[in-house]
Image: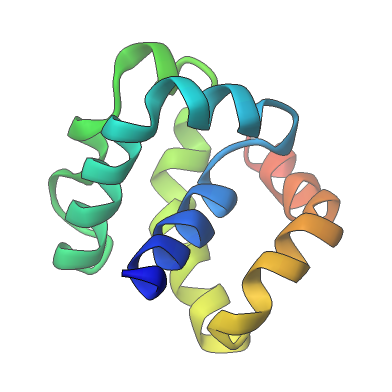
Length: 103
C-alpha cells in the first residue's frame, strides 16, 4: 500500500505545477488517482487524460499533457524511483524551465 501511494505521489508531483501542487492535489486527488492508475496500467498511452477533470486541465498546458508520458518515461529511465521525490521537490525549477519551452 505504501509503495502504491508513493507511486501515485511521484506521478502527481511530476504532473502538477509546483506552485499549485497542494491546491490541485487536495481538490482533485480522486481524479488524479484514477488517471494515474490508467496511466500506469496503459504505460502512458490510452485514456489516462480522460480521467482528468477539465478544471484541472485548465492549469496544465496541452503541450505538457502531450509530452508528459515521454517525460515520465525518460525520468524513469534516468532516475531511480526512490530519488524522484527529492529531485522533484528540490530541482523542480529545471523541469518547469523545460515545460515552459513547450508552451
